[in-house]
Length: 219
Image 1 (tube, rainbow, N blue to C red):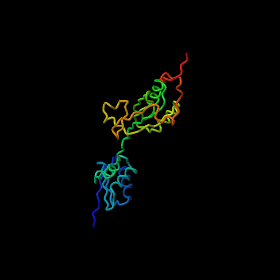
Image 2 (image 1 turned 90 degrees about the horizontal axis):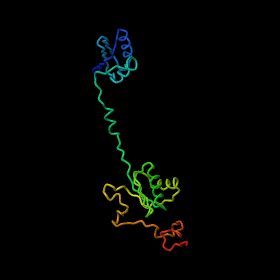
Image 3 (image 1 turned 120 degrees about the horizontal axis):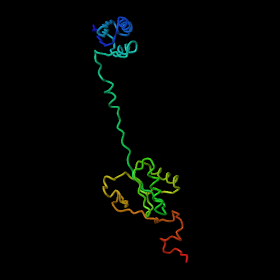
Image 4 (image 1 turned 45 degrees about the horizontal axis):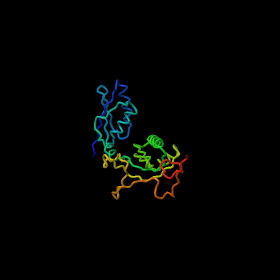
């Protein structure tokens, strides 16, 4: 025959009335066959073949005192071992470099574009090049959101020239350069303004521009 389990608990008791309450709440409990209460030593011994130590402790805490403690047998920390494998490692978001093309008439335009884009959440750095009409944005942000943001805040139309993963660590000191190089072919790719196929783009009239040698002059 299987031997009865012996469960020992520690419960703070002040008198014989406490002893009676502890005895009553455990005697009728599932699996409990015998209850011995030693209130001067604050000790409770429970015997039973099918008695569950954790359930007996929970019963005592709910019915008598929250300060009840299980002395023997000591339960194994199974829950902690099961929870540890459930932890998932979340990969950090990738930093991207996005190059946009937008028309800038002066340095003021470049300053405004840089100022507004730096306020955008996820943007780490902005480089605006007025001569090439390009804006280089580094950060954790989608290229399409940058285009919409410029249209909304400044009313400027922008096009996505390219977007790639940030390679600033590999570039070293060259990361701050205004020359955008093509990683695939190894050659230099310069974005010219205006583009070769100017028929696809409409720019403001430059008849009276100082940069146009054939512009009309008013005497």
